[in-house]
Image 1: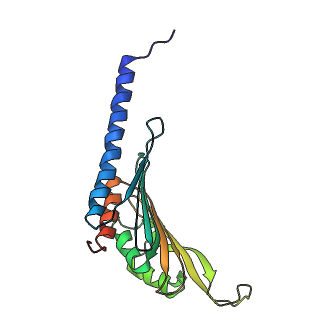
Image 2 (image 1 turned 180 degrees about the vertical axis):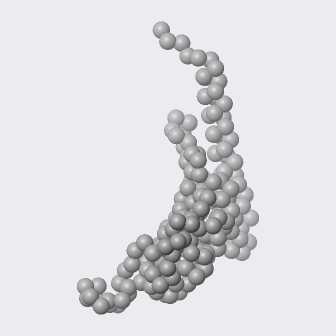
Image 3 (image 1 turned 60 degrees about the vertical axis):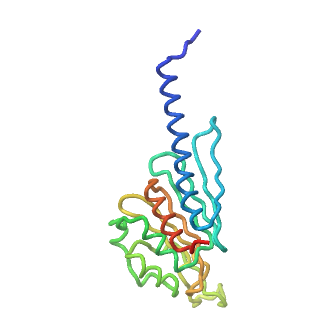
Length: 202
């Protein structure tokens, strides 16, 4: 017969309690912040038998946001869908870290095609590079001389965080899907705070 180690069991209980407290803290921070803006978020948490995670989701206008925490090192991620283009630099700047120096060395503004991508590059201090391009709307996709625009941009910061931006079109009317992955809790909270700051209280 195998007997459990009481010390191991105690450590497991302490660790489980710490995770539960962290779940609650993360959700409460987001909820308090968003309620001040008249937004009521939804919170989903893992079951006690699962690996820990918590999701806070909310919408404002056409934009939907999901803040996820998987409780490993820099385990926070934020996903914005249909984010107005003009808010993307505000959200990205909130990470408050310099762009990765290795990627920044290859940054070339002439790579960016289309007003939206060019403007976003100018607002983000060399953080982003072109990850993919698409034909300009209204042009023959099969023609060899079809003009293109930069449709996907990506980059990473020196200390933490990876960003990926998908643009809906080439001009300044574009909206974007923006993902920021591998953030600390402090950085994730700063991003949500920056976004919420653009919303007028109801």
